[in-house]
Length: 175
Image (cartoon, rainbow, N blue to C red; front, side):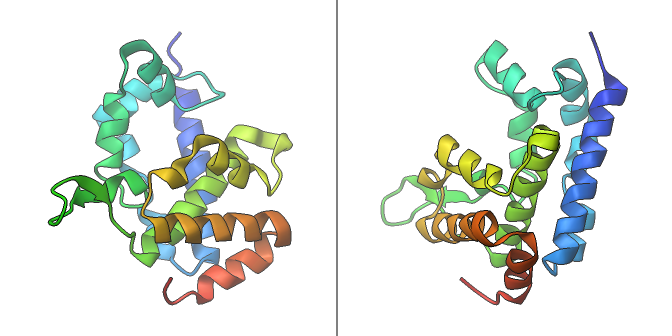
């Protein structure tokens, strides 16, 4: 069954949560620009087609075909995804992770927290984003400094809560 209204509702709820977080993190422009590619036909149509309500439509598309065209489109246009930050290392001639600029690391944190809230609903706790990060082993695929800082922020969220974590993030100048 195709669910355009439900898919749109999830996108809008997620974007709103990310915007709120980005404003708290001191990067309001990133919040306003967040995930605009999700409204493009390349992402929106598969999002409707593979909508389930409990996980990203990209996961079902990936389950069915072995890859997600919508995700490949998305990660190539949204710099808050660590997958965007890979390039050929001139020394090794291999694709390797590149350290993310701070503004996109902050947006990635906001995105992960918002996604956890949307998908967990009333079951959300401040430990969910950290647990998801560790379970998915994303840190193994990121630049080591980016992974270490994201993990530090997720642990801070888990242990000290949103207010203290966003205050810290807003005042970060580098990592």
